[in-house]
Length: 179
Image 1 (cartoon, rainbow, N blue to C red):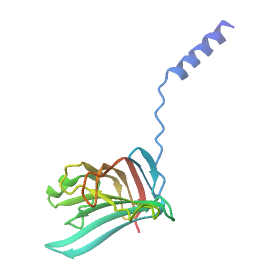
Image 2 (image 1 turned 90 degrees about the vertical axis):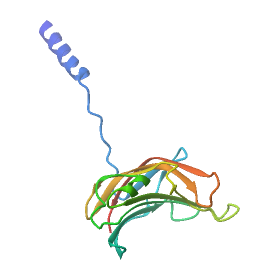
Image 3 (image 1 turned 180 degrees about the horizontal axis):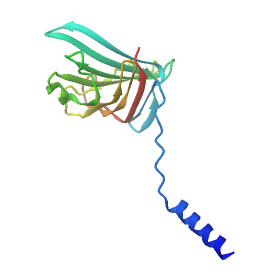
Image 4 (image 1 turned 180 degrees about the vertical axis):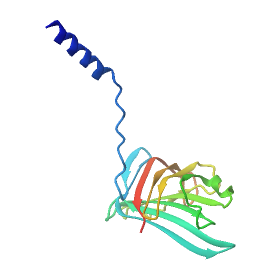
């Protein structure tokens, strides 16, 4: 009997003392989510991602454009994630900020958040990445292929009409199939 108690105690000790690896919850495909000014939001309606090539300047430019809406009706919010490069092959895994424009080739990264509510006192204007870099914005591409792009984003966006209005974006995540 003592042997069984000792065996049970040893097995119990082994299972309770082992650290379990935290479960990593993958971001579902064709989703964009973020916390906007403290409110969790999902931009999972009309989600799309495109990589376009534009001829111009000294070569061919490439733009990765990811977008989604909070709902198909109004009021609704929208999130756009853009990474644009002056080289067709330079949109790759990496972290991009407004300072990435100093890279060779330059890579421009910016976010746009908009909210439209016709019941408000006028048309709502979107918030953009601060082009002067005073407010930080970061887009990280953790995985990209010809068919899918995944990553994270965050930043403080400024009201498009100037002034002091800002929107703080945290915990941004995306996993979108490329069309």
